Image 1 (cartoon, rainbow, N blue to C red):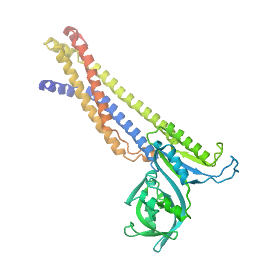
Image 2: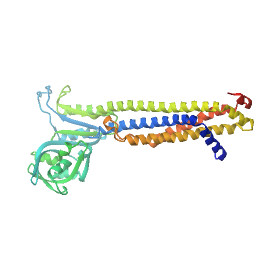
Image 3: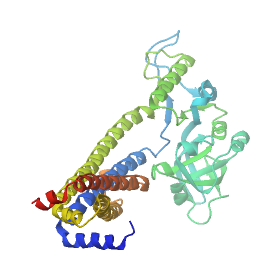
Image 4: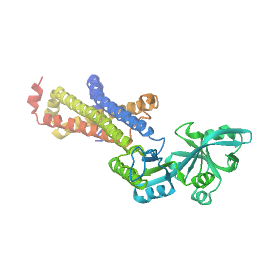
Length: 409
């Protein structure tokens, strides 16, 4: 392996057969290049898919109500179904192990004033889990705490656009805003991936907002972020179970589809995961096919190389070269070509993905990239294949009698 004469001989052989060497290396480099770029684009599709579900929690079930359309259990149709605090508690307590985050929400539009500035904003009464469910980022201060709920504190967490509209200068934390005649202290500012609309909201403790509404215990919507370890099929069954329990609790006909609405993201996730799986499978199949083509290519070229050097091998054997030295020479040359070409392919592939960056985001390819673990695995697969591809014809050539090798054309 560290025989200087052998290394000189290998590089001399490479220099004297440039075309052969380039063809061998091109097959390996192209195979790795296409493999890396394809898997990188596949990863970009996955990233774009994931970002499409980051507006709110991915594992979200939203429960709301409407009017009944079917008379049931002695009650007339066209009856407004309303959720309350006890309904929320019963939903969460029915199967706590399946609930990761949860919050009731009571929403209303109210006039908000700060100094000379004013505007109408959506006021959202919720608990401490709302920030996680809405996928909000606290830019300054803090979010609502359990203590705020217990004290029915007049505190508010405002969206970034609310701060821009009303509190134009200075640190908003600790400032007081007038919400429908009641003074609230700003304790936090949030940003939301949903954009400007979601950032023009103000969150307050639901207990405080209900108290402002004459001690009402009304809940507009219930949000349940189910356990993220649940499969989409299990999450769908859980959502159906909740819908059935709410209908029973509110005395709604099982056939009435307008009184209770349950929007379960697991339904969309199930189809999306299937689509993503198919895309990943196709990309993986093409990528593996490219690697296989590279392996076949290097194998065929090594067979040709050995056949081309048959007379040279005969001369070596005639002057006393041992079969093992012939095998080692050809294999070492094969590995050198494979490694150098593989590194070139890896470098070009990684550079291409780096240059692409987010330029293809409009085509749903975001931040394409490939993990080094996969790159190293593919690289080693080609190197080992090059090793095997060099060994098989070299071993056969080492068994040829010198006189037969010298007569070969």
